Length: 196
Image (cartoon, rainbow, N blue to C red; front, side):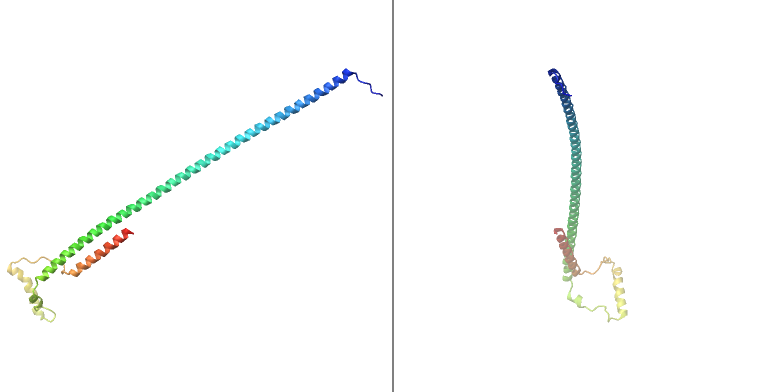
């Protein structure tokens, strides 16, 4: 069978239909591509929004950590200041204690000096005869020693004189000098401790 030629109008209508179908397919493809692109843009925007949110959360955590570090630094500074204040108070107390000790040592040294002067004046009034006169000692007769002791106790009552005041101990200026030396030594140690 031989192919019949198509009339010119029929050929144009068929080509037109084919072109319309191609155009519709192209429009459908373009619409799908546009929809896919819009979906991709929406996904990208959503992902970008999620990333911005995560970044904001990270920034917030970093700010909280920096604030916590700043508060910790403030606490450490306050503890250090408190420790320095405590050391300053202790040093002040040691200084006052040393000053009081020095004052006591000076007073003791002054008393020792006055006592030494008084003892020196008493010794100046003692005569050589009184010092060299024989007394009751180890080689004396026990009865003579008892009589001498009884006579010295009875003597104030007989004469009506008042008994002498009780003396705490024998006057020994070397004890006063030793006390003054010990006080000066302690004072020097206290001053050295304060200075260091």
